[in-house]
Image 1 (cartoon, rainbow, N blue to C red):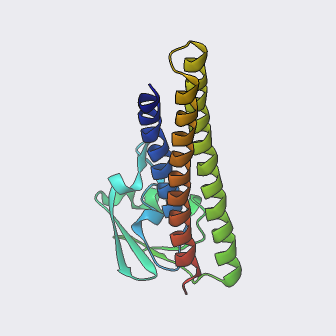
Image 2: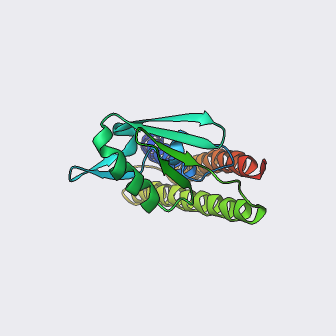
Length: 185
């Protein structure tokens, strides 16, 4: 019974961590990355479409992105969407593509982005703890319904805590990697 409960929550925890990783992609480092703009929503003929579904995004230089739409008519819409995303980027529309220059990060901005990454990490830790709380509640209800014994409850608690520790270490590793990227000039 305990094993099934833990197996049922692990995919939820992994999903929260995957979402966290995708949120971290939107925090720019000193280098250009397609992940910075690929999820920007563009209003294209009245439909909201992610940028990655309507253009190719390339990195011609370490501090530049080039967004080349498959439909040249959408160039203006893409430019407006990137400007509205308020990422602090320099945008130039050359008629064929939108070129995005990433200004160098100041030390202050790097610290601010590091704090933002830490906040995202804390939010995912809270999410993982909430998922653990749901599983713990299921275990306690199983004990009340006499489906498990007291020993099984404590064994379940130990396994839950070990799972939480593993997930927290995984989160810490991910955020530490991102912060080291931010600190690298």
